[in-house]
Amino acid sequence: MEEHGTLGTVWASLGMTAYYMALIWINILLGLFLSPLFIIPATWLQDRFRNRGTPRAETTRASTTRA
Image (cartoon, rainbow, N blue to C red):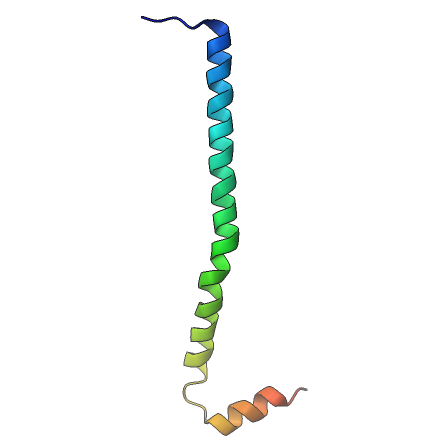
């Protein structure tokens, strides 16, 4: 069995801490930047399905008139 001492244990724990912090950081960034790529087209689809039964002239008139 090998023994690396206290310094080896501290060094390994610092490395693992840095690794897991980087892993959490990249997962946060992926969620932050990739979420709009899925949310924005989903809202386009929701708008299309919501306006499916209304005639085209009513939707353009309703969108240009503001109360």
